[in-house]
Length: 191
Length: 257
Image (tube, rainbow over all chains, first blue to last red; front, side, top):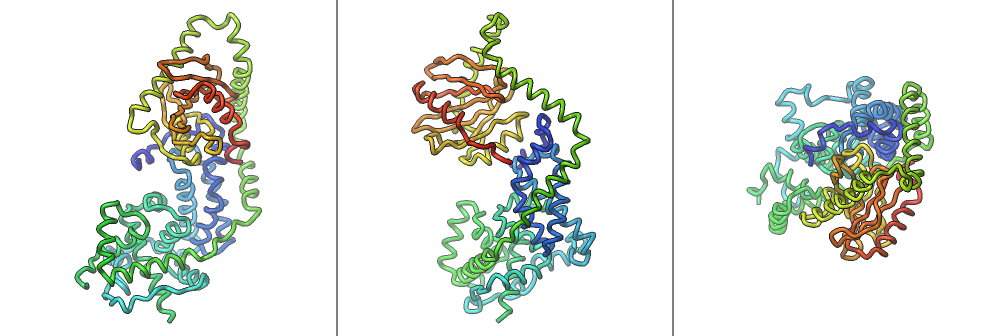
């Protein structure tokens, strides 16, 4: 199934681009906006990004060959957001590929909860209100924030997340796990 | 207890929480969860974290954004005008062909050869239906969600039909498959009515076949501007007539826009 999805079929050859755009991209606009908002943390930036992404999707609609219109659409939004961030807020984006292997390892696997084993008594439930969660999410490095947002708020499965951010499923799993640990540490430290 | 804290645990815990573990691993993991207090505590914490994250209100899209995007796309269109014009002409021609199809078909223009070809279409459509019933399932994509089936067709075929779910009218959408009629891959939508499977094959317009019984299956065919539909089922022909009526009434508005 996932193998088939990568085959590009020129499916829209007999339709005009606008009809195809309306069917493929437009239904996902509200979700696209939410994702952009989470990635940039700012509503006017999110608006710019969604507009830019819509234009890219429209121009590239003939390349839509995937079965999954939602993943295809959100991939464009995500990539648009990342190039926007790289241009406008380069300090906020640290690309995993720019880090050394040791640093990547450190960021993805080690840390507060990875180095020490907690006893059951130490493990408390998270009690945080929406504002606190929002602030904690905003503090996460964007690589971790995006997998958590895609998983929890867009409710996408691992396969679709892997497709959207263009990494193997194993990496999605480790980033989700690590991102949740970081979030737990941020929310747990308030007390 | 500490020995059970393997590196893999954290990943398994997350995958379990996300419903991404395979059934065998779920069984194993649930047994461990029941006997391992530390693991259980971490699972509970993860669930509480998920609830906290999901409690964050979703931001709404600004009301004017969609309109702004669409008007920007309209500004993009001039470069495509010639292409669009040619296409809309050809779809008008198709519509005209469908409207006058019946008239033409009663005239001398239809040769016996063409007639034979059409009835051949009916038997090919029935063959597709029979083959599908022999397969483990009568569809290639299983879904009762028209938003899944329609894009699946769109990705494989140059023209794909609307895929209404008619469950409210007694015909539940099961999924879709691609049949090959002549040398053309075409979309077939599969419905369930009581214990009966209905295959609805969609052909280019103007290929309607007569109502008939082939190999014990009833065949009923009708056309609209975009497609000729051929329904095949072991349902009585009166029920197929009902099916035609509810399908044609279908969703009141187009799927998007």
